Image 1 (cartoon, helix red, strand yellow):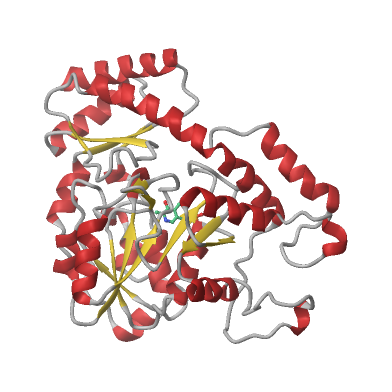
Image 2 (cartoon, rainbow, N blue to C red; image 1 turned 135 degrees about the vertical axis):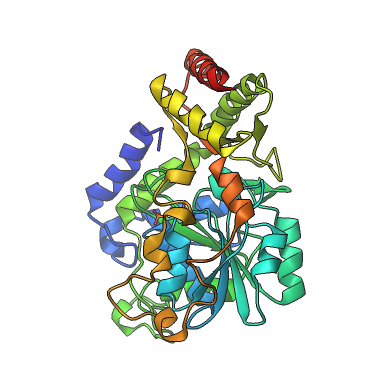
Length: 394
Ligand SMILES: *Cc1c(COP(=O)(O)O)cnc(C)c1O
């Protein structure tokens, strides 16, 4: 969330003037305005998806696509150890069993990591496109085909990311996106699922609204074929998301310009490596990720950055919500209610699990959050401070 202004206010005011806060029905109130539908159409237009359905969050988007794809009780699902924790929670709450696989320099699950983690009982891969760019989709699709695994894509951090000309989220059965306050575009709180599969879309539409089929004009008399729940987005949130989607092309352009400049400057430092991009042009450029030569050096660099007051660089290795080394609650399966995994047992010993590749990469990795609002001057000054601090150590 960086650009917010008159356009968002206008869309939200449209809704406030009619009072039609609900996305379905109420034709008499809404004066022809259907913000959720417009938001979905905008996402379809931008991503090229056949279908999009907006929900309350990126987390409920994950829950929705998992259920619609038939992934639930007792199903093993491969997840990465480096991710915002939401998809792992989604697997637990959906009754499924997470299997952690290794990431590689793409910062996402690798084809080999998936292949090593799976067992004959594995049903799906919940791939997370981390830090704004696509995973090795070609390799991962091959592994999924070979082993008959369902691919689901959590694109919570990857709106605006493309792989070989096609948006992330369209390679698997479905893709989910987050529009929370920290993502490249936001609704305040919101999420969306996309797919090219019409029947899957209808299932997601129904699951996210108590099974309503959204046909006819009497909501109370609609048919229901499926159990659902309430993951409905409000018209107000959708209105904001709509304005934000329209700004996305401009945001991407500015991100890329600022990221390119920073990357060029960081190339001055030998011994610093960059995250592997599987499609450089398709990068949404929300982050510039780099690897330091070793964990002790990385620790020194992050101390130095703090001392020099250089903000905006994250060391995910010590962040409570993004890497498995900080997830005791998950390893302990701590939840007030019984879950499927309590009854069935975990498919891996989460306390003993060894992910040396991920551990090594994460212990050496830093992420610079790219701001699309930086002026040339600001980007330059930031680069000076950043390079200066790193040079004191390297
Ligand atoms: C942010 C995020 C989510 C969750 O999105 P919310 O809208 O905050 O629920 C899920 N997956 C990933 C990868 C995320 O970064």
